[in-house]
Image (cartoon, rainbow, N blue to C red; front, side):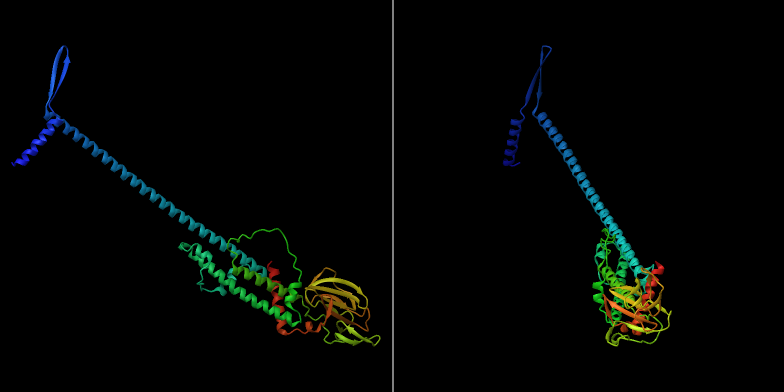
Length: 393
């Protein structure tokens, strides 16, 4: 062994001797004194045992700490999984609510379309009526409702139905607008302005405000446009029916026209406010348009008179009558018998004096009684539609 190693071992022994010197413990018991010698080796052995016990305890403690950390980590992982499950459940619930909301929107929209269609056309099933118009095509546009459930594949059929409803509404709107334009053109053919009729028509409305059940989205722009278009068509067609276009009697010839003439009694120039239809006494006189009888009686110069209000400021007057066949307040339709021809008032013989007045002013009745066939056809279609609506309730 080298000298240096020997010196190192000697130094180690010296340090051990200094740390663990031999010790003697004296014990007194029963008048006797005993002593116990604790050698350096025993002390070192005890120290080693204590050190080993300490290391063992430390190892157990570290192991327990490691186990606790693992348990905490597992708990954290379970908590995260729980949160993930809760988030997924929340998403599923959100999808379900979105689908339910869409279904409610579609149902409310369908109810609206059915009611609108029934009101204007008398059909109970607007959806069935519009199926041919809509066809199998699907719109490529993405709307707000589809966006709400873009991640819910089970709602795809509802989205397709939503697109079909919107497309049907647009197609029906265009069809209604074309029909309304025909009615407007027919009204212009009588020399009347349909826009002025719309502005002058009294449309009294009122009642408490009750929000429509589809207010959360079902009342789309397409449906609003459709409702407006149908309201316009409704007004124009009803206005068209109130315009006198039916002949008030079967007499084919006129004995005196509207405008300037010589008075048949004194020969002076005079203004004649209507048309004269000669005939036989007692011949039926018919309403020239739908309306309500507003006057039955006598007027100076006219003799026995019946007047019918047709709405939009239009009134027809039937004079020189021999008898009445209607009463004030009675509703009549074009062609209904309201009186009989006579020669009362300033009259030279049995005839009908027929006037058309617009807002109280006499206008020439001839354009009304000489309506074109296409105009009469539009009136006929409108008449059939309103009759159908009334029959289906």
